[in-house]
Image (cartoon, rainbow over all chains, first blue to last red; front, side):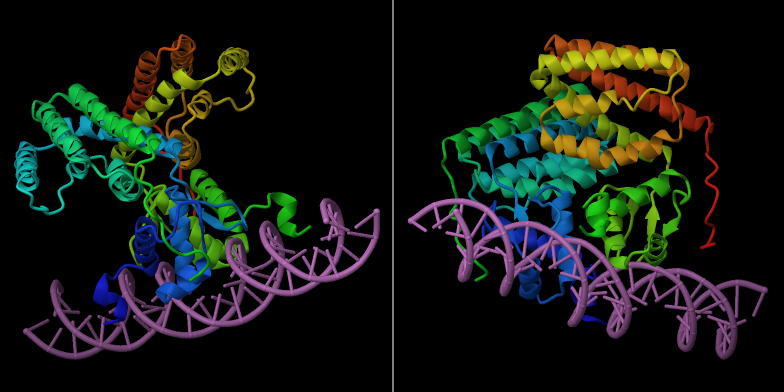
Length: 230
Length: 230
DNA sequence: CCGATCCGTACTGTCAACACTTATGGGGCG
DNA sequence: CGCCCCATAAGTGTTGACAGTACGGATCGG
C-alpha cells in the first residue's frame, strides 16, 4: 500500500545504512572526511532522524568515528586499521569454520563443493559468475547466529570497503581457490581443528597480501569528489 | 556550564544505553519480555529520540531482538544463546590473548601479575576487593582497538547479563585464579600460541560450567516485576 | 605584523507531534 | 461453537523545529 511497502518494507534507517555504506564504498566520501547528517538527509529526501540512526549504526560497526558534538568522520584506511580488522576476522571466522566442520550437513557441504568448482570454472572461462562468496557460506553454516550476524552482517560491510583497495589478482585468486578447497575438505572430513587452522591461515595470508600492496602504495583509488557539499 | 557538563558531558543516548542495560541486568525487565520506548522515555524523563538510539544500540549488540514495527524484546537467556555468545568470546578473547602475549609491555605484565595476586589475597581474606577484571586487562593489552571495543565495550554488557545466572562458586573461583595465572605466565614468556590456547580453554571451561548449572535449572533468578506497566 | 578574544555560523543533540503499521478484541457468518 | 473479518488501540517510524556546542573568521590589543 504505502510507498515503503513497494520496495522492501524495511525502515528507512536500514536502507540508509546500506546506502551510506555504498557511497562510502564508491569513494564519493573519502576516508577521513566528515559526513553531514543534514546533507545526507537532503540527498536521500528524508528527515535527519533516520539518517541519524544509520550514522549511529555506522559508528556501531566502527566504520565511522565520532565524539559528542563533533562531526562524524569516516575512518581512515590506514594499514593498522586493516590489520586490526583482519585479526578480528581471523579469530571469528576461524571459529565459524570450526563450528561449520561440526555442524554443516553433508548435503550442504556437497552443494558448497559443487558451487566452489562451478565458480572456479566460471572465472576460468572468463565469465563473471554470479556472486559466490565462499566465506559467507561457511559462516552461514556455522550455526552460531551471533557470529553469523557479526561476520555476514556488520563486519561484512567493512570488508567490502577494504577490499576496494586491493582487488585480487589472478594468482591470488587461484591460490584462494586452492585454499578454499582444502578448507572445505577439512570440513567434509569433520576435522574442526584443521578446518579452523586452515581458515585462519587463509585469512592471515589475505591480510598479509593486503598489507603488502598497501605498503607498496599501489592502489590509492581516486576518491574524487565532495570537497564541500557539492 | 550546562547541566550536561556537570555529570558526564556524554549524550543522553549513551547514558540511556547504560541505564537500560542496568535495569535489564537488575532483572526488572525479564528476558523475553517487551520494552516500550515511550515508557522508557517517560521513566528517564527524556524524549523518545535518545531512547530510540539507545534501543537501537541494544539491538546492535544483540541484547534485544527487533523487527520493523514489532515490539523490541529482550533476548531470552536460553542455553543456546549463552553457548553462542561464549563461542564468540572464546574466539575473540583467544585472539586478544595471543596479541597481548606479543604486545603487552613487561611493565604492564608485571603490574597485572601483582594485581592478580593482590586480588587473590583479598578474596581469600574475605574482602570484597575493588573491581579487578583480569579479562578486561588482557583485552586492553592486546592493542587491537577493534577487539578491545568489541570485547570490553558492547559484548561486555552481555557477559554481565549472563553472569547473573551462575555466580561463581568458591571452587571455580580458585580454579579460575589458577588458570589466569597460567595464562599470564604464557604471556610473560611471550608464547602467543600457548596464551591463546589457554585462554580459549579457560573460557570454554567457564562456558561448560555455565551450561551445566543452566541445565540443572539451578538459578532462575526471580525476575520480579513489570507484568504490564504497573 | 602577530596573537588573543569575541562573535557568527554550521552542525549536532533533543524534543514534541504526526503518519503508518501491527496486534487485539468483538461481531458476523459458516 | 469455531473461524474469519473488521474496527479499535497501542506502539513504532518519521518529521520539522528548537536548544546547545564546536569551529572559523573578524576585530582589537600588543
